[in-house]
Image (cartoon, rainbow, N blue to C red):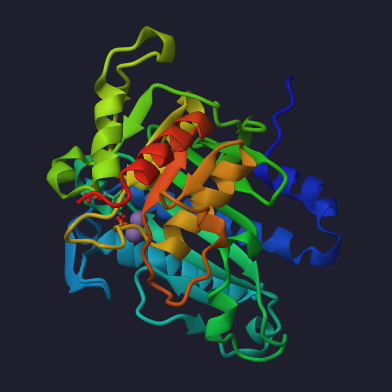
Length: 339
Ligand code: AHG
Ligand code: MN
Ligand code: MN
C-alpha cells in the first residue's frame, strides 16, 4: 500500500529542525492538531445543533458580534493549551486581555500562542468555509514566571511557527515552522491529518484579486486605481483578472496561495487602519506567504517587521503572489498623497 505520511509522523520527523526545542514545539503542534479536530467536529454539525449556531448575543473587544462557535473554538483551544503545558499564555481575538496561565507546568512553558479561533464567523450559518489561525512565539520573559505583555507584542519575524486550519469542503491544516509550508487534509474516516500538499508554493503571478469591493468609495486612491488595473483588458498580463471574495480570510488566502492571486484589505475612511488584526491574522498569514514564496505588506512595508504596540492592533493587508503585490504597491506609492 502507498504510504501516507500523517501529520503526527511529519511533526516528529521534523523535530530535528529545532535543536533548541527539546520536543516541546512538537507537542505544541500536536495540541493544536487535537484542538482543531474538536472544533472541526462542531463546525461540521453547525446546521444541526441549535446550541452552536448563531450569535451568542455578546460582542468582543472590537465591538464585533460574537458567534457561539467563536466562543466555543476559543475555549477549546485555550483548554487544550492549558492542559498540555507547552505555552505559558494565549492571546486571542476573542479576549480583551491575554491569558497568562498560572499553574506550575504552564509557567515553565517556553512559548506563547496568538490566535483567531474562528475566522470568517459571518459564514458559519451559511455553510461557507471558515478557519482557525495561529501564531507561535518563544516567550521573552523568564521561564517559570507568568507570561507578560512583551511576550505577545513581538514583530512577526520572531514567529517560530504559524498556520491555519480551514474547515472547507474538506478540512485542512496548513503550517510552517520556517522551513516551507506543508498542508495536511483530514481523513474523516480515520480522524487523521494526512500530508496532501507538501511544500506549498505561492505562484509568482496570478489572475485572482480578492477585495470587498462594496467598500470601493471608501478606499484609498491607490487601491481604486489598482482595482481598475485588474479589470482592464491586456493580453500580455492576462487581464482582466477574476474577482473572488469569500469573506473568510483563511479561505480567500488558501485559494490564492494555491491558484495565484492577491488579497487586499486596505484602510477605508471608516477603518483607518483596516480591519484585520496584525497579531492574529496578518502576521501568521504573512509568515506562511513568505515561506511559500509570496509577499505580505500593509501597502508600503513588510507586515512581519511591524513592531506591535497593542494586542488587538489592526493593519491593512496586501498579501499574495509577488508580482501582483508589487504592482498594487506601485499604485499605492504613486497615489499616496491623493485624496
Ligand atoms: P473574523 O470572523 O475572525 O472576525 O474575521 C473576519 C474577517 C476576515 O475573515 C474576512 O476576510 C473579513 O473579515 C471580511 O470583512 P468584510 O466583511 O469587511 O469584507
Ligand atoms: Mn478573522
Ligand atoms: Mn475570528
